[in-house]
Image (cartoon, rainbow, N blue to C red; front, side, top):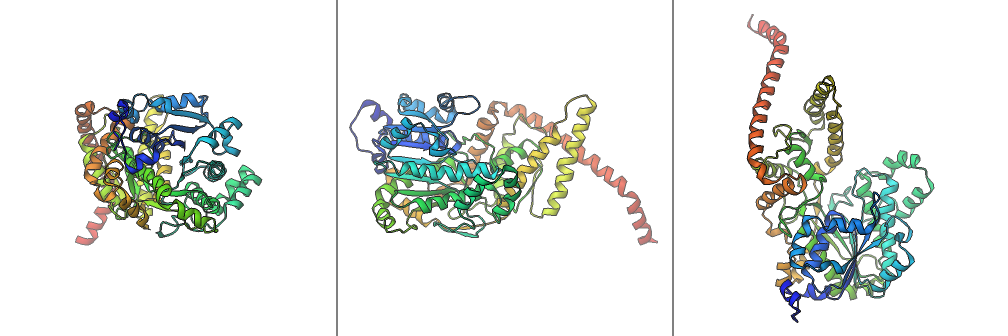
Length: 521
């Protein structure tokens, strides 16, 4: 294994098989400014000192050019360990202005020629992850973007490997999901034609019929993107990596790092601050979550695998027109370390209540409800009516109401994730296990992705602290103050319950008196 110290000293050493594979490589990453992309970037630069260059495909956003956006991502704490171990890494990283949703990736002729001639490894992770994204936007980024990347990859004479980052749930209408391609109910060609020929209003109207059994545009377009990969894979050293629900880091480079409120993390935060009281969820179903650092390790290894162990056979078969030889890796927890949603929330509650946040607005009171009707009743009484009451008080005090708006947003978010919290899937991950078996002992240590060794209790200890510190920006030094606040909120919570119970008793007194009179007389 090549260490950072040896690299800085210029010592001639032999690295692990994965380090040797990446040595001298020029890498293109799309989605490098995203959650998983940041962890991938720092891991490659930190553990593979022989990497020559990394190009990040970045689009201008909110008036910021690509250089400014790239500089900003390196301010994140997730790069702190990289800065300590490899302080001169910046000369290896370059921003390239582009947009996956545009024809030819929106690249200038010079940049396209440069990438084509220099790049030998591609990580395609750019995607819109909004579940409720408009169909035309999701198709442009997730489907057309994938097609555009493969078109560029085909022009790279030095190409050793390309990884398409998909999702384990891209075929979620199925119960069983193996590590293979599946047909989509409608071809990506037809969807792209519709997007080009129909107005935005028409597309909005027909989106439900286009989705069919798919719950949202995200998983639907990710399934179509896999169809693009399947159709365009001939002759390319290509792999598909399907992570499940990606959450905070286990321990690398820092414990519990996370930078977004997506999925179950948003549920934890909402419940932790006292805003979210109920969720439409089956507590017995499996929460297929995976730590982002372990997922990235598996991704890095899968690229090594396709180039060093599968490449020759794949190219031989692909040239014969066989579209089923692309290695697909399902990176899920259900196969090796299953965790139910009930266990998820119990662990979150246990570790969260030990370090309550100073930002709490109410005491923790949360429940998982499988029955849809009962859930809607709870939403009415536990979310909307209290929010309406608070907004009424704010209006009377001549303030601007906001709680009802917040609750509506939380409710939309809850509805989006309900599909995944009420179902179970039968995944297989034999390819992933075979990949693990092919790793050397040194690479297993450096790129550990074996879910069988993960201790959920230890993970949640760091996960909840990471959410508090990195996401909520609430340092652990405020815990004593937050506990005092929580005790006050607890007694206020109990007081409100007592008042409501007495009020309910008063309202029911005539009914109870009538029943008692007829029973005992």
